[in-house]
Image (cartoon, rainbow, N blue to C red):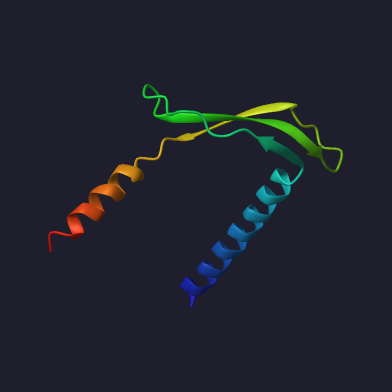
Length: 87
């Protein structure tokens, strides 16, 4: 019974956190450029966004830069497809 209570409490905390993050992200809307090329040194790619709309009197930056890791799955998927034909 204690496990069920802990699980329920954890779920509620997760939902509250998700809701707070969603509200924070909904305040500023940006129009983004396409992702740039992968930077081999950092293993990331970058794109820039220009402010499109600000809601609820939010204080938004005019432009933002977003980074994400380069996608190594492209090569893995190609190798997986080649490997399936050998069986």
